[in-house]
Length: 123
Length: 242
Image (cartoon, rainbow over all chains, first blue to last red; front, side, top):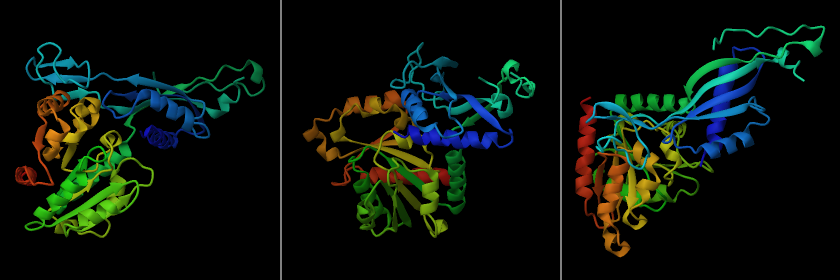
């Protein structure tokens, strides 16, 4: 498992995003994770808790949004929610659905930031 | 939420009654592994421009990647210019075995990293003339989990599964099967000894990745190797015409 390595990538991505923002503190971060992203949400949260202290993500709340597994059914000509990655079939007509539309996401959606000179006034 | 809305600054003289700081949302919407993806795309372009067909192999440790690759290189080198990169946490043993084929081979020792990334491939290729190659093979670290997230710029990704591993592997590791372009069932000569349920294994592969091309072979006896090489040649030809 490489969730620590993924969090390190997140930290670097956040650092790049904050370059033009002036002195700020990150109060929250949202990651969107699909069932076929290759990471486990629990492990990601564990890695975040372990790796964030001492970095610009220290103290930030981690929001993990689970994205759905959806596919295009060539038979129904419709977008379908697929229940499990173990069986990529259309829930309606049972035909195989290899064309995935979502489910592989591992994305930094947004950051919630607070300007540092204001944060000093928090009790 | 408007990302340009600035929070009002607190009054400097009376911090106790200042307004609480207003957080704002900064939309990012970027892939966490963007850096690898960008590098992989650059590699893919480089490979295409150089005319080298790049094939990567992923599997559990012990599935037979190295033996399969060695036998592939041994056959191909008679008529093609081939080379290989192999990733392992430690030792150069696999590189030595692959080099028995006569092909140039480089070992990537990852230390503790459980998968290969595009950066490692780029570094390992330093000094090699890609235009002088027909095929480049990249054997990933034996791991069915982590390599799935990392594009290496390859044209064809093979997932290997040996008859001695049982039929459940595809159901247990749908993610890696979903990133593969073809599956290879190895060690067919051990099928009977392992009581391998071929029909279930094939069905499970189709369940997690409908339509995935599946080949079956034994690198040791040679059974199925000719069909594999023909498939490989077809893939390379198809890629050249796009």
